[in-house]
Length: 466
Image 1 (cartoon, rainbow, N blue to C red):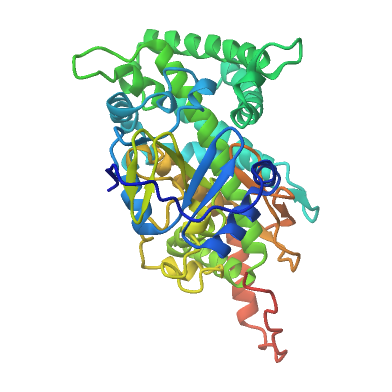
Image 2: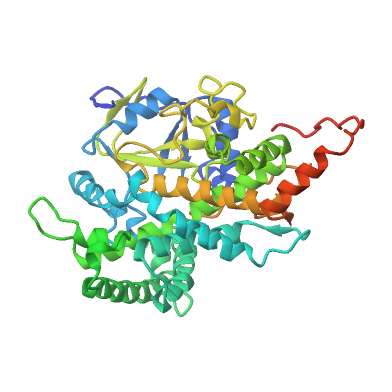
């Protein structure tokens, strides 16, 4: 745990590049720049960035644990995103207020309750894949985002209808504009005319609020409210320690946060899963066999390995409120500390042959805390982690059951920062072929067993394991 100190400031090595160049490089090639600096300087280094100034990057699990364990009086997550989601969002809250809100928001996402959403996930997946064409290459990212957005809309609000159709249209717009504004100076949010992004986001946000407040009123009037399992119903039932409910506008802000932060990161991880598996067909084959046999162990390990090697969120952040000692470093107040999820996941000390895609490393082995941190950590760990994991598991199960994916020897897709998530640079390209129904596949296997065994020598897998 970091501690307050009066010792002289001692920052990790500073990248010796002009401030403006560092900022432009991170905007244009964030993942590559973070990785290159990590190779050069190791587990801790300092950028000097426009607007932010000295910014410390850490990735060592021990130091990460110390930071995540540090109280909000010493270091807290910045609330920049709160300006996008609203003052009632968890992203706008700090300290005790954030902990109390988290306590109220977390219960609907407990593992046992997430099971209630698996039917919704499968229904949305089947609806999306109905139009996929055999043998035609296409990008998976947007289809995966539609599945995850539709899933979380139904999980949050408990039903479908015209209001949810409006949110399907508005939420992606809000994410696109809000994620861009998040990385720009506050002056960019002012009104500079009709096409100014700040006022445009405000207009979209008002429309979203109108829809959510309408859904809140409908939920309150529902005669069967007691039997509802959706997130909205649970938040309406939630009570603070003094017995008071969460304010309607705070609920609206929290729901927008869940919709925005929850669906695109999960959709991106699903696109990455296919991107990785097409380049590692031996795992693809084993996963298909497992699905046909009704298993899930390798699939869950694959999800963990995809999130390790291609995390959709590259970093989580804290800002110091006092001068603190963190490991061997002394960091002044008002300094941003970036925990690099990408670099933490690539530590050879934590993961043998860390550069290789190897789901078997997680078969029978739980991920290491503070090294495997795709959901962040501490009091700010993602409340929707269980739902995101369930979505990935069910969607992959359905895709492997319904399709075969053509392997490829194409180069790995570049990691591209879209603001909310790190996505495959070409959208996660895929070529699929529909599989025969399970009954027909079984007959095919029986027939094949009666034929002479082929004497052909199989071609060894020549694909890179990276």
